[in-house]
Length: 530
Image (cartoon, rainbow, N blue to C red; front, side):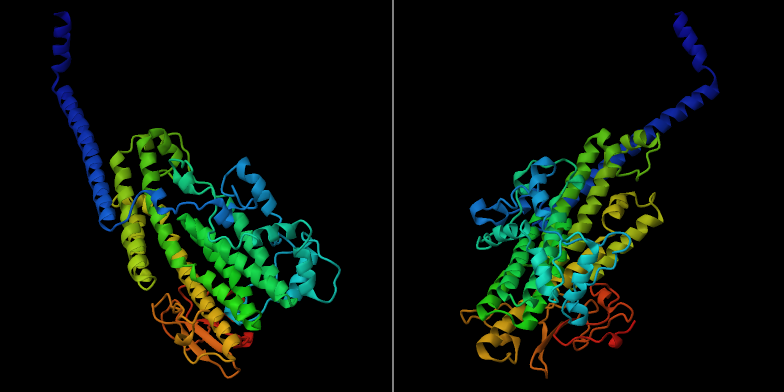
């Protein structure tokens, strides 16, 4: 009775009852808002999942990956490559051995200006191996022989040192295997919950090997060893084919880089017409197996699946929310971890849904159904969404994760479209050189090109328009191939290069106004302009 009387006296003041009522209302509002946010976010995610299924796409990352072939049929099953994908000690031994195939990178300080090695696209010019040899001797990481006056032979000797050549020959011996895939594949490995943090230690070594093989191919060609050059180029294409199969954007970018690296020796070997018709058909067949559009499409599908699973993984574990840093940026003030842990799960669901729908509607569907032709328009729409998010995170909280994930996609699409164009022109060039070696002339039209069995080859396609690659025989007895470039306007095969550094013109960039050109007439730098 005493306790009851005390409680009555405690609740008697009007001000206390008002404060208590307001507190209850606030609690109900918080609980109701929390519930509403969770419900709305869940509905958004369910809708996104339904749309993904309706379009025939999937959120199962492993289902996107091909089954690994038997080691005996896989270039990646060679002892030189096996386990290259594994992080830590399991793969370190393989990667350490592959590090032998490395061209010294420009170091800080004196040796930062390495002579350019990829001039075909801008200047239709072979690599200056004399300048390369001087730089390599000054840099000192690669053991160069005494200057013989033949830079190509000197560089080839340095790249064929006792430790390197057996490794290259081991790789060459596996080129008759019908498949190329890096193993162990992600399809067969246990994947972590947060795929944003997946380690891919093999990509650095793959890119370095591509640089090594490109210089080796150019040196062999200029030293008069056409077969060795052909084999080095073919091995580069096998490595690119292996990289294409991993359904990740970083993998597609490495494949794009590999394509840009192999283009120089491919251009030089076509320019020299070094090899037989069978050799050029062999290169063309391997190029037929490379599609950077397909690689990027699979990468977007993989990123869709792994982004959804990773954000949901962070959502489901309050401890991992703080570790994921999804909503707090890089700063670690004491009050932010507890705050992130109580964020409604609906906020994560809403962000997941927006990421999924942007991937589906602005990257996967356009690239799948129309190629690169409408990707610029979709990128503008994505940029508009990102601008909304930056204008007010409070008004558009569901776009926060998208703002973190998507800013780099524009450059990825541009680089891949250009690289796909390069692949198309390399395919056409190989077919043209094979045709010349059989008929003693180039065809009037690309439709006359055939394979070694007399069957028409796949038509070369401009990725920016989905139209045919332009072809013209030139007065010097050769030919010119060109595509419209990023502006989708046919300039008749004209390059528009920067006057100060024409070899560094950014052909894939949105501001480039000329065509993408493959020809053999060296461009004089004074003809370039800003």
